[in-house]
Image 1 (cartoon, rainbow, N blue to C red):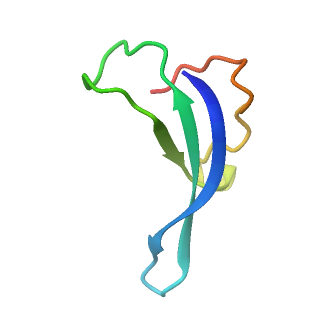
Image 2 (image 1 turned 120 degrees about the vertical axis):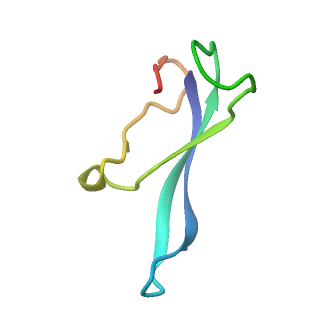
Length: 68
């Protein structure tokens, strides 16, 4: 896939009422090797690498990524 956009979104609240943030990457799917038979437009990740999030994808659409 190629990443064409990025924004931070709220995905609800934790048990203490604090907002849960996620990074939403808009992607252009090139090929599906194995998975659902539908087109995927966005993927979500945690907002920090400390909680296994991916925060540094190139969003200009020039690099291709294998997403699993």
